[in-house]
Image (cartoon, rainbow, N blue to C red):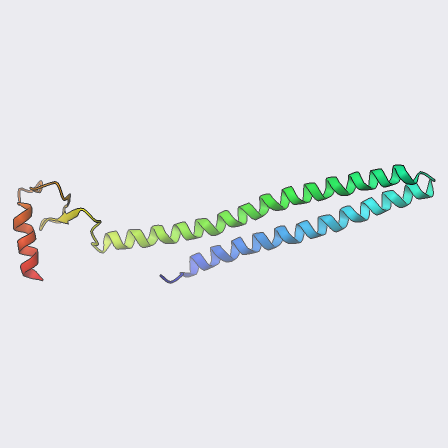
Length: 140
């Protein structure tokens, strides 16, 4: 099955969302690292190296944790957009095959147009399944 333009656009949108999540995560980690270094430098200047190191590590750890969580949520949204595009595509394909008259396994179509299950021997219009199947096989 070929991908139509709507699905391609939706998949591209999902890919763009994932790219934005990756960029956000990288920038947030860089920003957090700079904040941690700034805190460390401040406390070194104040002659409190170990306190500065601890605060810098806490800031860095919390920032990386936050960046990973938010980026994971954004990536999940991107994947959902892509999966939704695939689902819509398969739904459209299913609709067109049903409308074209392709029968599901275990069904037969009467000459009146109704679909019946295999265990139904007479259609609601009154025609017998054997007669209809014989008539259909003669047409082919």
